[in-house]
Image (cartoon, rainbow, N blue to C red; front, side, top):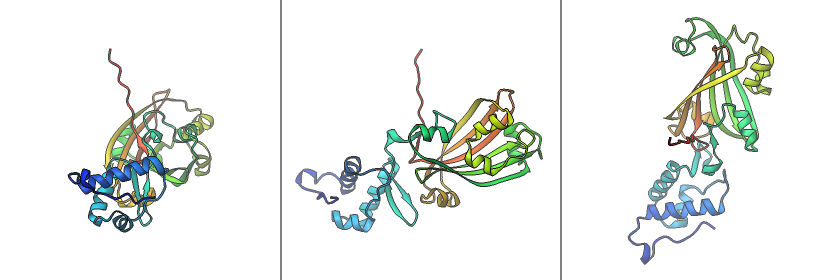
Length: 248
């Protein structure tokens, strides 16, 4: 049951928005599951006898705190629990990490094309301009929920005859090792906050300008060659970056 009256003498000094945030947060934690749908703004306004502006402010606060996410045209839903979110610092294989969390990963190959490397990417990959590369666009999904958009660049001379059908069935790094004999030695990643573009928002099923985590990954073979450079956009409500510091 959603309806819990707000106000009362003991709460008269507490702003209604904060009261509603606390009520909804408690209900989400105690009664709801990830991806459960919340009532609409109008329904919550009627249930709690507050204005829609108050409801909107409360939902925005819960969104910023990672308790809910929005899907354009569908509504507002409960986000994954904080301790159940994917730790992007712990593994560079999306497929393997999802399986380790007992989630069902799906990769949709949206583009695989051989092109001349763009100048800015050439610098990142330490190759000459116009070097042929494969550009690989993928949508990463877990338990039917869009999680991440990835655009990868791979040197075409190192991975000739790359096929989309192979990558749809196999983790990229496994395929590179099994088919091309490329052993992944190390991965450098940089993370920075951003806002989802309207185009990416449609694929991730979130509102445009929602918070996101941008990831820039450079993958090195044991020969020292850069065999992959990837730019990713990840849903902020599904990922957490965890760092452990040790004081020496």
